[in-house]
Amino acid sequence: MKHLIIYAHPVQDSFNHQICLSVQQNLERSGHTVAVRDLYALNFDPVLSEQEMADCYAGEAPREDVLKEQQYIKDADSLIFIYPIWWAGMPAILKGYIDRVFSYGFAYAYNEDGQLIRMLTDKHSLIINTHGSSAAHYDQIGMTDGLIVTAGAGILEFVGTQPAGHLLFGDMDDALEDRKEQIIEQIKAELSTKFPTDNSAS
Image 1 (cartoon, rainbow, N blue to C red):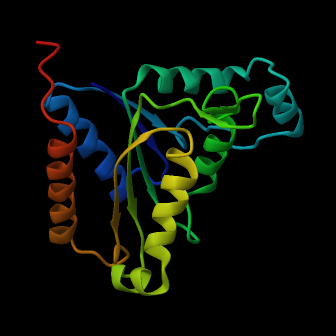
Image 2 (cartoon, one colour):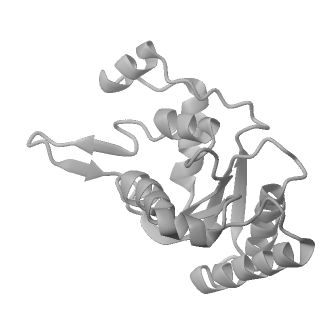
């Protein structure tokens, strides 16, 4: 199985980076193929310009950087998003990636009757998030459900991906190493369940 990790965190020694490396290593040990797109390291341009939007709806070819990212998505069986929750949402660079890469004609379209055509139905999607507030607080104010609906139904299921889960880990601002290790192990267990060992390459 081919996985594409779409990763967004600017700090190289962050816990998110640790999660990203762990996910990549565990999948590869299980016989899977993994590509990682580190949006900050790539200096990905998140700005969807007026001209680019017009070209998109006119059926023009996407910009070169967008075409490259779309090819990574085409080649993947699963999309794994790893990012922190900032200001009740994803980092701006990732939102811009979705604005530009999940474009009309690539990720979705509409037929002559105005019905939605979901174009990424052959992909699975998994989201892994960290946030500073407690999970109990997020649950109480409806934030947990809101994040799941926004990223899941609002984006990934809208374009047709098959949801493989949304993992949210709170209280991370002051998390000790033992808790971080527990989270890494929890993610490892989730991966082994959702994406079992792939022996097709052997």
